Image (cartoon, rainbow, N blue to C red; front, side, top):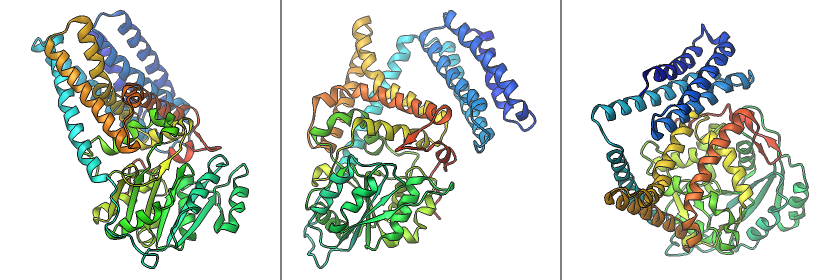
Length: 500
């Protein structure tokens, strides 16, 4: 390692840390400008140096994210709450990553670890992690399979339910969604559709269904202390009268017996909160390329550091009294996915369930690729707590454990790496492809080779959308159905509220 170069890199991180101090915060623009110059010099020296691919790429990535963190000091307007605190935390985490990397390089040089030995250790770890993912996926899918109740409830014993749909600029999908719900054989159901300040003909579409029992609710503009969707949920909850409230998006379609089947199972298990992952029919498969990593976070990745159970926002339900006693949506009014709060609360009391619709229900989603991209951009950065360092960790995690095993396998063939590296990388790649096949089957009910083969593309897209979501929130705007959500989201609670 070039010590002079490393000291230059370390200096840039130290400057970022001291910028966050109260004493130097007023001079942050001047110091940030100086730091940008130093980062540019360090990256330029890195390009002309011969320090090795892994060393150069790692430091370049850290410095680029570091530059991103600094530039938002100049770009983000004064309304950015707790900017100084966020910048300090990001700088501290980036500094820790840099320190860990430098120590790793020093250890490697001290013990004369060769590149092949290092690569062997990496592929061994990848194979072990892939096996952990496999066993966790098997257990998660088995636990989430939907099985109908042994005895379907009669009309008399079924609970009253409210199907609650928040709608904003939904002319394309709303009508088909309502038609599928109205065809249900469920006897005790009210349907509420809230028009969330739409700018098109959505209100008229809702009113056109009034003669068939659909109740129109004119939504109010949310206060600054609320996320718009959470406020829409609260208004729907206030108007609901059923024992259970089922929330769903307009891109969901129900089979005739789905609601009866779902609530027979819910009552049989004494469930108070439930989330259901819709299936993806072949006719609507174009959007699957963006969904795998979303499903992976619920079914594949062990939740070692999280107490939140698997949960999907597309279709979820809760007992109305449970929501009210939990504080309603006001208890999670700035949480990007409020259903996670109630799922965690229900899980602690043993009254939460998560189901896969593809294993016994006709429930499915027709969400397009464009809509999934917009949803991903809206949610990825807030789900990371609006924290740059978590985007880095997630991106590196996906690249190392989902993408690189296949790349190492190909490189082993081309460059003649030792046989054990080829074997382990091949086995890790095959395990990952098998997991992808299991996820496809769990969601769609069948295995598509196209989905399996395109898994690396899905990983690359996931990394791209995370970084783009971060950039859009910090330097551009995120427009969700005609509403810029950047301001309320950037002041959201970065984690779920504590449960008392």
